Image (tube, rainbow, N blue to C red; front, top):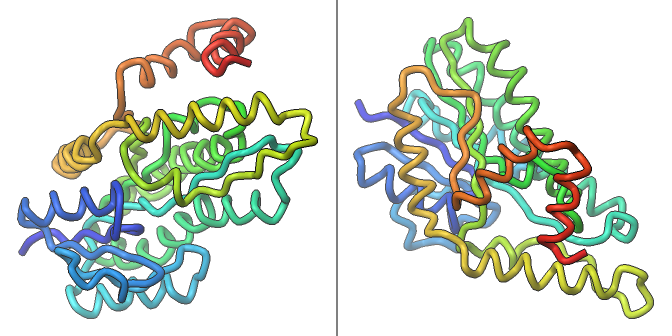
Length: 267
């Protein structure tokens, strides 16, 4: 029997690329979307799921289990971007981002774990971000939500190891997807003290995504992790300098690293 893979946010971007790649490799793939009817031509089934709605999470998992009898791999890929000066981002938008990027994946994990425990096997891959390793200016909320998912995975994987269930993080850098179009942008306000710096940084961030790498690289990385007997705690996928920035943060004094970031963002 082929392995059954459930990918949240599998209708576009990285999730779609991963799903198509794994399907070609012989996996049984299910993706998710809040509006699956919008993807009639998907190469694999798209099931209704909104990571901010626990009822849809439970219904989705039960649907896959009823059809396949198991879920071997969960890929927590659904996520949302958010940009803006932290002072000017409405609290409701900050909470919404954490609901999608942090609480949502946790609730999907909670829904899948009893089934994986019953089958005494399973792999959970949380797609985080290289941005989650550092507090980036005007991306602070996004950095925080992805960083929180990175950290909780470290604890979670130790708690479930006795059930023969593995968990890992894969942190991508900038990839050419539609995340920039879908993220929440705090408006660049005319009377804002952040107007010039935030406006310039926003242009830089969008340029990075537009010139980002092919999502197929993430698909290949995830395929490799699925075939590893004992996955590592963290994986990073992206351009050399993006991955190297994590190493620099670890070895440089905090203020030196901060100056490097500010120089990069022209602050």
